[in-house]
Amino acid sequence: MTYNLSIKFAETERELSLIAGLRYKVFRDEFKADGDSFDHFNKLEWGPYDDSCKHILCMANFPDKKEIAIGTFRIRTLNNTDDKYQIQSEFNIDKLLERKLNSCELGRICIDSRFRNGIILFEIWLFLFNYLREKNIEIIIGVGSFMGCDLTYHMNSIRALFDKYVSPETKMIKSTQEINENIFENESYNEVEGIKRIPDILKAYLRFGCRVAPYYYIDYEFRTIDVCCVLLIKDIPNYQQKMLKKGFLS
Image (cartoon, rainbow, N blue to C red; front, side, top):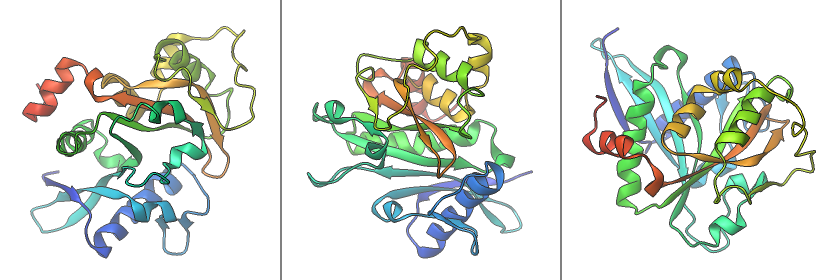
């Protein structure tokens, strides 16, 4: 399958519609998510919050002129003092924001299953990294999601995250949900199996230096278990920094 990639910020209604269609295909058809943001008649996934965000669009362009939307990422920065990130409905990040670092929220990343080979995600990150450097962004905030609401099924992975990937910046972040946050505290778990079953996109975040808060939020509407992810740009490993700056995998 020969194709060229093009990555840009969506600008037109058509481009935004392609993103909404891709998100429906991945989140609804593949992962069975649901909620108010899903338009089942038109097969689109889009909510009011999206209108205040910038959206990365990755297209595959084929020799026969066919074009397919294969990847997307949503970005938002806070421009006014009364602005809120969507993640604040799930996690209390007030202490993080009090540090007054230039921040942005990332979300709704999805990649067409036929193109989920690691390269597409890297190319989107390369585009994103250049944008963040231009905007002098110092900290990235978002959620990593496990599909489905069964805590027991994802227990090994969640315990592995909480045991290995919490930092001083994230340990004070708590869920806004009244849940038993120590539900796994006294249970043994399989770390190797847990690491293996962490979603690929979340694994990619961790390789870039992302750390998580030791609490979860169950999104019963979207049908996911979310963990709060925080990435300080200065903490991106040197090897990853060099790759992003050079723009190639080697």
